Image (cartoon, rainbow, N blue to C red; front, side, top):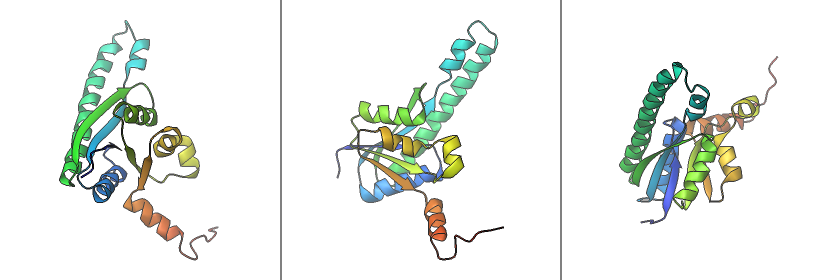
Length: 168
């Protein structure tokens, strides 16, 4: 049984679920923190100080935090069902998800950061960014990016002979 703590970034996506499965397969019984990194609405709230819309925003923030806690709990339950010693954690920061993941890994002294990959490339990656790529570039800890089954399947299809045909 591993005693080092693994940080698993979890957002409820199939990619994140696959990451949990892989951690359980590779490190059975590992201690894990299942992290949902969320951006708080504090920055927006500061701009609305004194405006009546701020009350509505507080309600949205509370609902968002509740949903975040449910997602983290779902991930931890999934991890425990897979054989990991997991606990949920929600991190609310005004930073990006990737920055929050890297910061959380430092705070808990994670031996490994694990996250799923959606496999975005090209324009979509440039426009939407890639949390996994950003974590890989900024983390000071070992990091494992796990492609989902859909990403693996798509990559296998694209690597077959004749898959680069030019469509006009």
